[in-house]
Each structure stands twice: as structure tokens, then as C-alpha cells.
Amino acid sequence: MTTSDFLGYQDLLTDREQAALSELRAYLDAEVRPIVNGCWERAEFPMQVIKPLAQLGVYSYSWPELAPFENSAVFRGFVALELSRVDASMATFAGVQTGLVAGSIAVCGSPEQRAEWLPKITSGELVGAFGLTEPLSGSDAARGLQTTARREGDTWVLNGAKRWIGNGTFSDVTIIWARDEADDQVKGFMVLTDTPGYTATKIEGKISLRTVQNADITLENVEVPESMRLQNANSFKDTAKVLRLTRAEVSWSSVGNAVGAYDAAVAYSKSRIQFGKPIGGHQLVQDLLVKSLGNITASLGMVVRVSQLLDEGTQRDEHSALAKTYTTSRMRETVAWCRELFGGNGIALEYNVARHFADAEALYSYEGTQEMNTLIVGRTITGKAAFI
Image 1 (cartoon, rainbow, N blue to C red):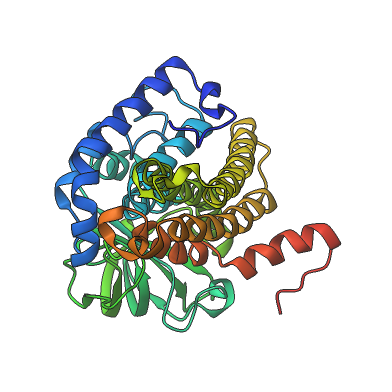
Image 2: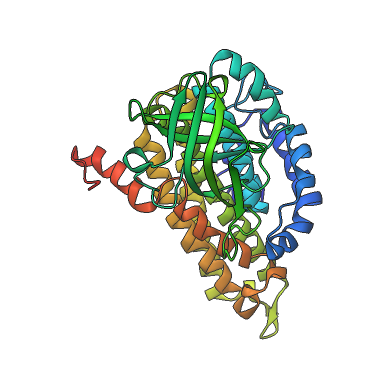
């Protein structure tokens, strides 16, 4: 890495982990970096990267029976960082595929479901999506979920709508969370996207994560067999177990997005000549770089420790919530400072900072808004819930 890993946190990784990270970095720089600005501008997803990322182990590291080698949560965090350093949309795609879809099956599926479906997802044979957020239900999903599930014999009938579903336009299977009409509890279903009554429509006109294919999904009497219901998803508490796995990873992606902007700014500061010398030799430019590096270093220290707690089995919701709220705030500052360093060139995609600047807005909001994560930590501090 560049000076962005100023305190050498990557040195905490094993030699095997560092080698795998280097291999991923080489692939991203050679095959993904050259195409990401065009994909972002056209709002297209590069389907050709799905299988190579699977072959590099990106989707399987979290699951011991499928991982290419034993690895740590800190290593998996660095994988998310590397993806986001090149393109936050790649990190988002992998996060949905690995954490939300495979995670739902691993955490809430039966042993049989895990054995059948995890290999298909982690190999890239199937692309998954995660359907929780709704047009009228976001942060209040625990109480406000309106999509319904009605059991009729060995079949479930789903009705409702989902919004902002990443990978939703081209997923083969979507995890749909719906409220059981019989007991009012939230349950999870693996829905094949060619099922009659299932419709996905691309959300157009985004200013952030344009490469991610977000969809509006409608479910009109969609029939799902009992065998496709996640057998261990019996309430929203089970849904929350899945979300707990991914919140810290989004913090790593936020650091990676900041690192991508910082790397571009450092390179530009050395090549851009003004007043007879590289702008990196001017005090105000160095101030922007140092402030950016300070944010990255502090954030990296936090996410490393949160991942270590995950490895130790002691990570709690408030730990990942604090990491999410802190790192995304610092990321927002950092990408703004880095864009500022470019002057007018900072709004042009070709200089490789504008995309990080824009993508920061989505990372700031998804996987738990700033406000919700603040309230989770605030409840721990004061012992008082202030959600409503």
C-alpha cells in the first residue's frame, strides 16, 4: 500500500493473507481500474469481473468450509478496503454477494440449505441480492416491514415491494424478508428471480455508486416452496444477525473509498505543476494531505480493532455501529479534501477522485444511517433508548 497505511496495520496479516491481498490488488489494478470510470459514467456493471473475483476467493473467505485458506476478519476487512480503493461499487457488489446473501444462508439457513446454496453463491455460479429495504420502510424495518408472506400448505405466497436492492436487476436469487401474516414475525425466503410475479426495475438517475445495479422489486403473489424458506429465520432478530456481519465491512469499504481518493490526490500532487513546482511542495496542499491521512489512519485503527473483536468472539452491535458512524463521517471529510486538492480537475472522472467523492454519499447512508448507528451507540453510553 501507499502511505495510506501509515502505521503498518497490514503487517498484522499472515504471509498467506498478505500474498492473497497482493494478488487481489494486482487483479484490480490491471483489470478493474481501467474500466471503472466508464462503467460508472454509463451506470453499467462489468459482468466479466464476477467469476475472477470468485476465483480469487473474494466471496468465500468468510465461510470456513469454502475458504481457500484459514483467514482472519482483519484480512477480510482489507479485502473490502482493496475493492473499495479501486471502486466502491465493486466492494458493494461483493458485500451483497458475500455478507448479505451468503450470510443470510449461512446464518439463517438449515445445514442442507447451507450445503446446497453457499457453493453456488461463493463460486459466482449464481448472483444474489438482498431484499430488506422497502419504499416506506428503511431504518424502521424491524417494525415497519410491509411485505407479507402467507402460507398455503407447503407454499408461501409473497406480496409487497422492495427498494434500493443492490444487484437486483441481474440477480439469480434474492433473499426476500417478509412478515408472516400468521404470527407477524419477519421471515426470510430465497426467491428465484424468474418466479412468476417477481419483477425488478432498475433505479435510474443516481449520483452515487452508479455502477451498482439497484432495483425496485415488486412481488405479486410470488409462490415460494417451504424448502426455500430460510429455516432458521423466525424473527427480525435473526435478520439482525446477518446485518451485524456486514456493518463492520462497510466501515472497511469506507476507509477504502477514502484511501482511493487519497492515493489519487498524492499522485496528482506530485505531477501537477503550478507556480513552477509540483503542487505537493505547497503548504496548503500538504495540509490537505496530512488531514486526509490522519482521518484514514484513525479510521483504519478503529476497523482493525473491531475486526479483531470479531475474531475473538466479543464484537457487539455498538462496536460496529461506532465504526460505521465514525469512519463514514471521516471518509466524507477526506474525499472532500482530496477533491479540493484537484481544483477544477477534481470534478472530472479521468482524474480518479470525483467517483470516490460521489460514492461516499451512498456509503454514508446505507447499512444503517448515521443517525441510527449514533442511537445504537448512544443507548450503550446512557442506557436509554432514544430511537423514537
